[in-house]
Image (cartoon, rainbow, N blue to C red; front, side):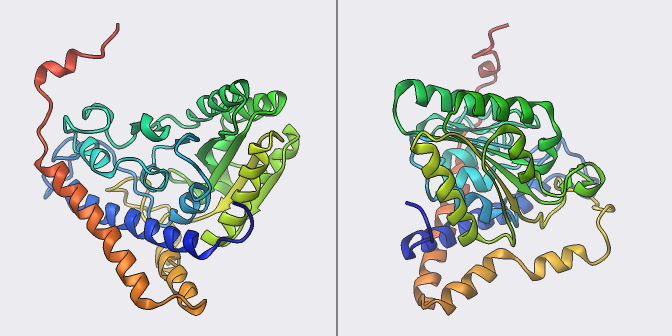
Length: 329
C-alpha cells in the first residue's frame, strides 16, 4: 500500500509504538537490578550496555507498516522499536535480552545482536554494519525475481561511515530494491550532528548515488508512512533504491547510565513535551478514533509485553557447556 495511512495501519502504528515504549519501560528497572548503589555495567540480569529507543518509534512503525515477513530489515545497536515493528517474536526477544536459553539466539547475542530468521530481521552493535547485508538481501531478491525489499535502518552518525557510501553506491549501480532509513536523533553517542556532519540534510547525499532522497520532518508516524510507502513501492516495482532521512529524537541517553552532560539545558524536557506517542493519540482522537478503542488496543499491547517479560524471567539459562557450541575458530 502507498499514500496516506489508512485507519487499520494507523491503529497498528499506535499499538506498536505503545508496545515498544512499554517494552523499554520494563527494561529500565530490570537493567538497574544489581547495579546500585554503585553502578557496574557488568552486574545484574542485563549486563553490558543498554540502548533505548524511546522517542524513535515513529521511524519504525511508519516504515514497517509496509513490510512483509519475507522482506529483510537490518537495524542498529538501538533496535527494540524496529524489531517489534518487524514482528520479531516478543517472548524470544525478551528472553534473548535476559540471556536465556529460549532467546532468539539462545541468549548469546543480547540486545544489540537480535536475529530472527522467521521475519528476516537482524541488528548489530557495529555502526553501519547492517547496510552491506541489506544490499546483499536486496540483490538476492532481484536475482530471484521476486518483489521482496530490504530496509537498512541507521543513525545519522553512520552516514559518515565509509560503509554507508559503499552500500549506497552498489545499491544504485545494481539497482536493487533497498531502502536506507536514517533515524536522525541529532546525536552520535554524545556528539551533535552539527559538529560532525558537513551537510544539513543527509537526504541530500542521495543525489551523489543517483537515487531519490527524502527528508521527513516532525517525528510524525503518518508522514513517515506516506514517504516510506512510496519508496518501498518503488523498490518493489524494480525501480531501485531510495534514501529516507527521518527527524526523530532520543528521549533517553545514548546508553542507560549516560549522565547526558552534553545536552543543552532544558532539551530533554522540551523533547518529552512533544513525545510522539501522546501526540499521535491526540491526532487519532481528533480524526474520529474512539478513545475506548485506543485504550483497548494499548492495553493489549502492554499485556503482550508483560507476558513476554514473565516468560523471559521464568526461562532457564543455557547450560555452561553451551558456551562452546556454534564456535568455529
